[in-house]
Image (cartoon, rainbow, N blue to C red; front, side):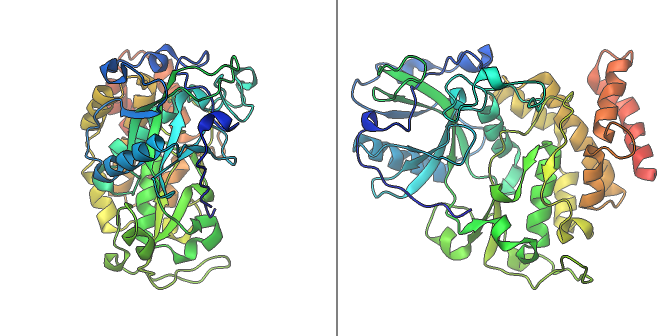
Length: 409
């Protein structure tokens, strides 16, 4: 989807778009409403000023986002305030530079779907078993940061993301209708200049390596929400004008041949085009989720051919123990059962790649076939029905054998 830029120079108190900067949402887990950050940087909150602060130093560098934050603060000082996007289910705000260019995207925890301050009418009362994907309301922003942290070497191209706080005296509270000094916490992601989404182009134009690297990230994190609109299409000329990374060099990827099918075929490499994945709030669900993922790339040509050697090498080099330590040290609020999701998926990818499976074959592990449960769900059920008290022991002994049996079928 092409993103139009809207510049508002008026003070936020006259806008109906923004909500109260309130972290302690009634629906958010205690771990989100009381993040163990050093709050000294927030005191005192200036009475007539919006302030943007980094809550935790990330485990990886964010040079482009750091520059964007400086510009956004400059804009806030000049009363250029964030604006709410209408086409998202949660509170998603464009943050501007003093020159009215979009620099970053802010998503407050307390405005996520089914949180009290959600601006789209998705209040806690509408949360039900049917909409539960294994992601607790108010934790999607943590998963946005986790996806960036786990995208080692920027391999899939997740934009730089941080956990931040935004304070202001001008933000309207949906809860009590009053204006007061409040602080919101949430995720802040570098804005990616783009022409449109992958839905507007179609997969024929995208490189095999680009698509496969994103697919590997989605399977590894069990991202439940990868549709065509959250794969942005950007070009070299746009990246040269912005802070967006040249995360992949399509000109260096090996060209693959294909047989024309009824719906799709390969095309010559388009060195100028790159897909950038955004929206990872539905990643790392707890392993007990029964939700079936939406993966737009599953039946694309790039998922049906052999996995590129660079992608295979990336999977071989994954160290799940280091990934778990990274999450526990930097985002300890993420549930243990969500970390088990990462462990299962990483092991599945490693075994599948060594067995020569395609991306499409690997993805079948997460979708129900003739059985009521998917392979992933069946493995989780086996653990809870077993006598194992340690999940890692179960996975390394029973889980591995179960996965190998699935691969051999």
